[in-house]
Image (cartoon, rainbow, N blue to C red; front, side):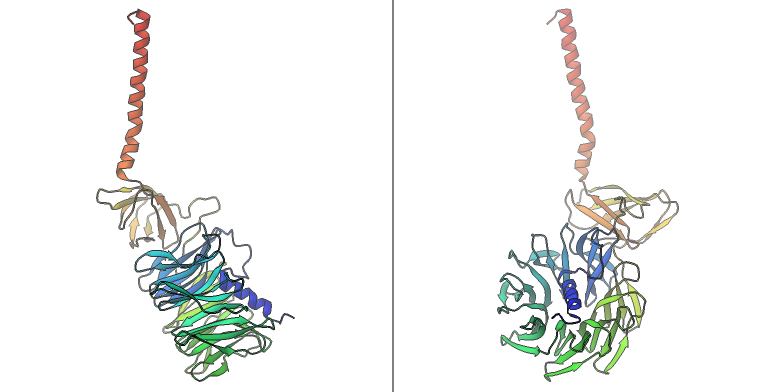
Length: 455
């Protein structure tokens, strides 16, 4: 028999593995930009951004207030994770789900896995990337050492091992058992030893680890609660006991955060291990789901704007905040906020690019713009019918597509053309006209001479 919360836990697992939120239906073709799977490391927030069906990875720097894009293609990228400058995700571009990496410092993308089966749900700490892998006909845990450029297998038994999390020398995951339930196991890289963490009845799933503390979602009490285990003391303890559901915990330092349904909608709650005290983070009437935490910053996915958006909360200031995000084109394909129009773009002699933008709106407007692939903050008023030229810095070639995203969310996309090519293309019609005219004059001259009998 399937236990009370088993289907609900499976749905959350699907979300965690594939980045599709189970309570959102009919949104795959939405023209509204939606964000989920938010995660944070230091000052960088990452999330999955969906516009008109495509899932791409976006990021935002809290220290520089810069919005940037990691992936941009017609396939789906989901489940981003980050450690220092390394971003990892699962990617569908090859017909199955593979693990890809992007180095923020080098601005370089590379592929980790290429097996024809699915590899999903990555996690990273230091030089080690881990994921769940279906190449053996069931879910196993595999790993990749970035420093050695070497892949290796962690688990090999016939049960499914899923949802890996890693911190330092410790790897944890949840694993199916003979009762069709899930238990939690751990692994030490230094000793290559696997050990049980929680093999209680019912389901233990959706876990996280920080230093010696492992946290997870547990339905042994008839609803989903948050439990924890101290690896150093070999001691398990319960965090929540409310009769409603608490799911999807995350941990950093002494703070544990989770999604909580005790108020009739999903809110974010937290627990301070040092004070042994629980407190509420959000209290809106919307749903706030799947929080992540780093230092004093909590991020989550929120429905209060009518679509899934990324929100944040700073525990040090008790201030909630939002982040700018791209806005999708309207359904008829026209750009939103069309008072900004790109009227010219070309290469200069030294390889730099000038982009001219004109304000066709009714009034003077303030343009606050970033270039995603080479951020240049702009903050300038543009009067009605006036134009401004922006110099792009970076390495470009003719045919490159550049996107400007205003803080208001306006998306301006255009293709670069070389100045010489443009000049050549502008001159070429005159050349054709002259050549054709000469041919016609020649034919007319031949005709006249024939009539006169001179040829």
